[in-house]
Image 1 (cartoon, helix red, strand yellow):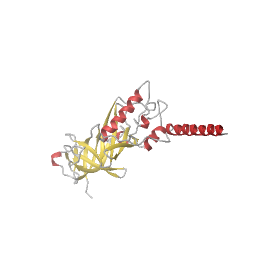
Image 2 (cartoon, one colour):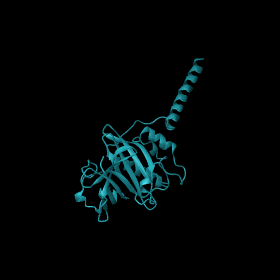
Image 3 (tube, rainbow, N blue to C red):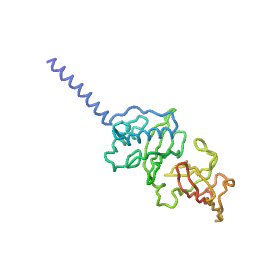
Image 4 (cartoon, rainbow, N blue to C red):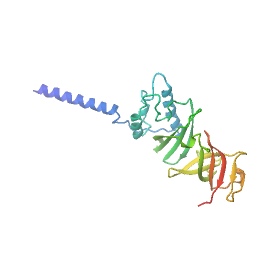
Length: 249
């Protein structure tokens, strides 16, 4: 009788272990949140490039490498990537936002605040218009990747201007932005604080409040001026075609 009880008890313990193992491997449990002590851009690129390398491999893929369960991803993002596992060549990769990986990419900081940051990763190559938008959150002295979204709008080639946004013209910007350049600080999705570096040349036209058009002279700019920027987005910023001054609020 006692032996039967021991056997049943032993089987119960084994069953609990097996169920717990399946639960963890199946995504019901996650390793504790980890952070990267590198800046948001490098944190983003380190993960993106590891995923891209695995996606380009002929012998493995990001899921076999368990990159979808990387501990610097939020638990919600790990669950999202696991459920969005790519199984065919014509599916859009949830990290690269492409059906086929690019060989080169560029990363641009959108904003960095005390507790959050956003970085956009742009693939380089003809026909590559999708972008990966990484949102990172601060925890202690490091950063973790909270979400990854795919977007195409600003870089669609059929638009006259790939960047067409109003905001405020500033040069006195905090790091990691470069105060040697003028920036447009603007609102996106109801959130203020996004910034784009601006490049002016002899083809850049400035339109004053009176409607007069002149060649832009950055030495005459004042901050903060409310303006509407139209131009082409590049890997490092916006090549300004027109800057239209607007009445301030």
